[in-house]
Image 1: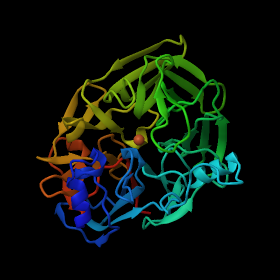
Image 2 (image 1 turned 90 degrees about the horizontal axis):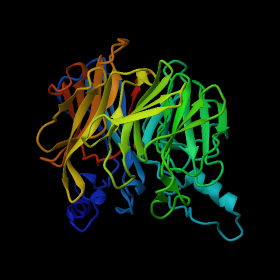
Image 3 (image 1 turned 45 degrees about the horizontal axis):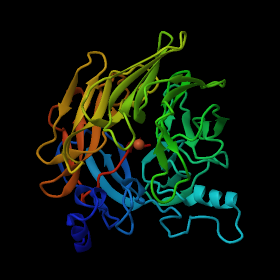
Amino acid sequence: MSTHEETDSRSPAQPFWLRGPFAPVTDEVTAHDLPVSGELPHDLAGTYLRNGPNPKDGASRHWWFGDGMVHGVHLEHGKARWYRNRYVRTARYGGTNLGAAADGEDASAARARRLRGGGTSNTHVVEHAGRLLSMVEAALPMQLDRELSTVGAFDFDGALDTPMTAHPKRCPATGELHFFGYQPMRPYLTYYIADAGGRVIAKREIENLGPSLMHDFALTEQYAVFFDSPARMTRDWGDGMPFEWSETHTARLGVVPRAGGTARWFDIEPGHLSHTANAFELDGTIVLEGARCARFEVSPPCLHHWEIDLGSGQTRERAIDARIVDFPRIDDRRIGRPHRYTYVIELCDFVDGTPTGARLRRYDRTTGASAAQDLGPRRIPGESVFVPRGDDPSEDAGYLLSIVYDGERDGSELVVLDAATFGAPPVARVRLPQRVPFGFHGTWVPAP
Ligand SMILES: [Fe+2]
């Protein structure tokens, strides 16, 4: 760790995302055969990847605006074979000016330039059809290779001509990747489906919608569900957050048949969907659960439940819990089907509005109860990712992986929990060679 970083991370004058466990790291590291305490399960073979903002110049105007950096830990045969962290080398990272149209350049050309290279690519990383894609909702995804080096912007062979959400959903039945792009001009919302081979097979403009902040959405067996937020997108991405909260635009849920057809919109209480846990159909009703803020960037997120009766058109909703939680994840094999367990990060302590303590929590939808997983004093977990154990279809047959910040030594570790004994001590902890700044979302890529 450099002196420069330590100086930055300890300066109280810095905003929260530039100091302490949020502070960017300066080095791209490759390390092999990492120390493990406990026992890594031998059936855990693959790479855990996590994306997050890490401003290259050491500063950014908002936590969300730092350049994307992907951290990877490769596990195999009970060993932690390697750790790598790499910047996603977007055009923006490379210093390309992605601002307004240059002299003689028309607005659509400037926009295409920003679409291809304007995003930070700092939010999520997923694999589909053998391609590793780093993503942010402002631009095209960036393809990475297995060693996390950047290949380039990926546009699904020209089919993707809008930004792409960082929260695509893979249908466990068809293997299709469902995703969307939103933007402040027409088409405001475009819904895409790529088949299991990675070819875009459907692309539809969703009607009866204006420019809405749409960070996440949901997928059921027959429908895509979109959240039309009172957070309106008032301009394109650039300096500052391009959203304004409307007191007159109520929130709505839009239900779109996957097979094609018209969107139906349903009014709900004003609020904003931070992240989807899951959605599914039950006796003609669509159930959606996720982290909801009463007001974007003002109110803290809590787990929430919505229902849409497709026959009567009636909606119902309720808070599931008053705890402050976000980053909900489930066993991805349950996407679009009734699930039992939702794993979240619970924010426990705040200093000056900044979370300083957190733990994992698991909600059991069948009992309504929840249980906490403390990771030890001054240990703060990131989003957990569920990894199934072999072909066992049981919903808790698997592992939870999370990168945990250890405040005692200002370092990070990859923690492996047995989901069946949630709440018990970790089965293994992999000590990482450098601190991993708090970031956003991660994924598990099984070994081929
Ligand atoms: Fe997200």
